[in-house]
Length: 256
Length: 351
Image (cartoon, rainbow over all chains, first blue to last red; front, side):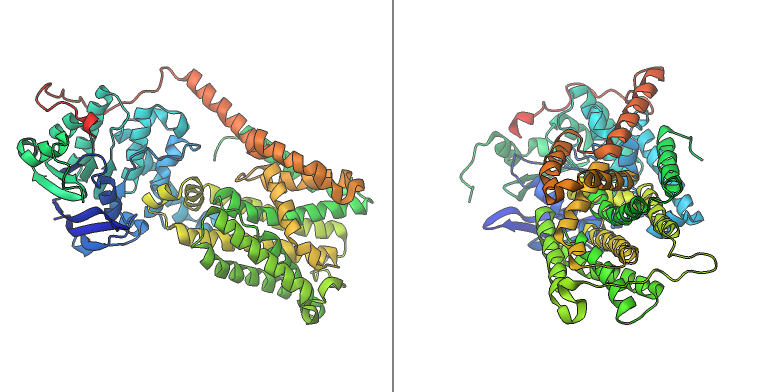
């Protein structure tokens, strides 16, 4: 297993935002995390990537315990993430945005930059190659010199993905990658995610667009009130009575 | 390597002006002295540029660290009779180490808390320099700070030679800024400035980099202060006051935050504006206050930042016009059609 989550929990005050969640993710799989609003999906991602400290449980990545490690450590280990609201360096060009993703894989120092050492130059060339490759892969090479804040929403979504890919992740956490883009763009983005997984990058995504998830995910984890209510293949999830209940909101009694 | 651009032309013009100025001003010692002062301030402003311009953290301790540089050189050369260069090296090391130590706290503070913390640090430094009379001579200051020891035919008692010594450090500061901006280090700092969350998500160690940026900025302030002491020969604690921090802040706002040439342009332009308003004495802030506010509102990127943005916009517009077709998203390979109707309908509403 690439990722093993055991009994993961996060309390904010008295509220259990995430409670006792287990999840196994195998290499190369696409796992979707769904659930009604406030189910704890984003919190769960924040726990995996080290943005929040879990109050209980553990996260094991590639056999290594990474529970409560800071984001800069988890990224170095190979976990990249994107945000729900697209976060970009809006005043920089698309290319510079993607180059920023290379920071974690760079070892160059101020001294190398000032003295323009051969090692520094080699690394900068490598960074540029990798960044251009990420732009090609995500289909936005045309926009390389545009300001990230000025390109269309669909392109911005792809820039966010390209930045994450530039960090050379093994596990990619995508928080609502298709939020705010059209049906057709969503289909194309789904295809891009599939190609990403085909490169051997394991993907976990939080998404509300069911058509995308059902066609994309190998496995689906359903959260409600911070707890797992179902886990399985898309077909199993579609038929699960608890899932249908949660989505229809038939039962609101368990809200403690 | 890269093409000669309008920006390179701008840099060449500024450099030429700075090199030619002392000869054009032959005999006008006062103006040359003013130029030298402006150049020392500009070095400190490059430090400001690293922490505020690139990293986005408003450090109000800058004048204080400038003062530490001044006093290290001033006290060591006069009371301990150290040679200037040894005292200067000590000043650089001290400001670097103290900056790094203060940076430990800076690790834990954000935005306005960082500004308040650093302002307190700056004020404490000022208090120590002005009140610890047995060591610093208090308000009387230090006089008789020697010129740097020359070598060969280089004699720093000649104001033109002194000017070029400061200019050398200034050019180094500008070059370092340029090198940082074009490297992963610059991208790291700018990432922190833009969004700490986003910086975290791409694996930037935000705390450590803030600390290093702060230490780099205080080191620049120390270098500038050390040079200021020997240029002036006589210094007092007012050269390290919080007012100085705000003057340096104005220099960089006018010149352009985060730019390579902004600190030079801002420092020289404002110093000479100050000079022309000298008759107003301290009332000049009544004029300059509104000028700063107007700048922040109408030209938040400063002179150089404004010019850079203008050039970049034109370049992009030209590239767009010369492009054969509008840029578009291009997925590699055919994207197989999703079988329609095979999946449940969108439940976006239930989100």
